[in-house]
Image (cartoon, rainbow, N blue to C red; front, side, top):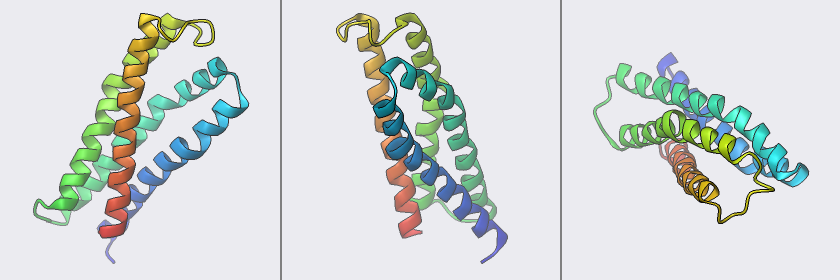
Length: 145
């Protein structure tokens, strides 16, 4: 296996492994063990780095595919989709969600039907969907390619 293959597999594995660990292990533990506001604050501190980590891993993986001289195929399409989703999370959803969280102040004291909470919930749902798509794409890449 040449160095580009190793870098590719490492980038995809670190990306999907990190996303799975953050999504299915760390975040649920935080929300079970801390108050809603404390858990949200802690997770909010990690989100910018988490999404940018995904962008870096995606760019590295995509670059290695191109440097290997591969033609456009399913793996490049999946990588591009994953990179598009995580970039949207990093540069649109996360900054807007952070602003909304600041405006909301306390999720424990603000009712769920409050317009800012509803707007945050829509962003959160879209982000969660993007995150699951990235994980599913990554698992597909690891298994098939």
